[in-house]
Amino acid sequence: MDFGKKRKRGQPPKSWEEKGEVAKRKDIYAFSETLMDVPREKLLLAVARVVKQNGDKDLADILEFVSANKTHSTELMTKIKMKIDNVNQISPQNALAMLFDANLGKSSFIAVQRAVNSCGKNVVPCYDRVRQAKTDCLPAFSSFSFGDTFASVKLAALLEHTARRILEHQKSVFLQEKENLTDRILTISLRRRAIVRKRKTLPTEVIALLDETECGLTPVPHDEYNMTELPDAVEENLVLESECGLLQ
Image 1 (cartoon, rainbow, N blue to C red):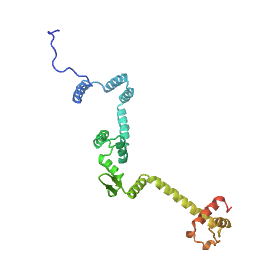
Image 2 (cartoon, one colour; image 1 turned 90 degrees about the vertical axis):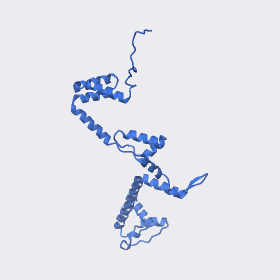
Image 3 (cartoon, rainbow, N blue to C red; image 1 turned 180 degrees about the vertical axis):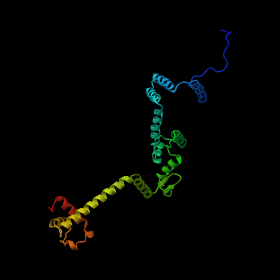
Image 4 (cartoon, rainbow, N blue to C red; image 1 turned 60 degrees about the vertical axis):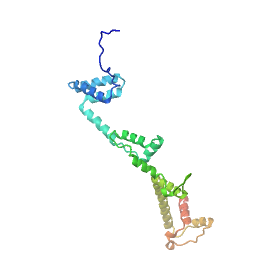
């Protein structure tokens, strides 16, 4: 053993990965001070070459694109900001589904919410809104019964709550069906009026169809016929008559 050689005091130097955040910031500041006089294009192209050698070709292409013209960096940031601004906040219902799928507790969900929203966009709603969405999934509290060994809910309240939730979440579907039904009723009404106007009395073919269904109807002059009191069976047979071309 060489006792004549002096040993350096202090801790041995750490690698970049082993350093903490404070030490890394100090090293970055010191290193950046040595590069202040380096031309912008030279610095960017040198970094682009290094990252390309390490296999990050996409980052190298971005650095080369930015180094070509100063306005390119402004254009690139504008496009990035547009993408970020177009990010919408997920609904409390979707956040609740994520909470259940990932089996997250309150503290875990809040940690995820803060981490995601730290990018500058309020993407994940707060836990209070998610908790309210969970409460909305349950019937009224008054419909529950609790005991030492059981818990139950009234069937009528459960069915009513289920129907209401279906209507809330499938509102667009029901509105579309309503429009389709309205169009169908309007089409029947227009066909009926066109047929009655073409003949002053109901055609014998229609009466025959009614007789077959045992409805029975005596021909009535058009001027004495009340359109608002036209029976449903007559209306449907008039539509059938129009579709079959009996008036041709």
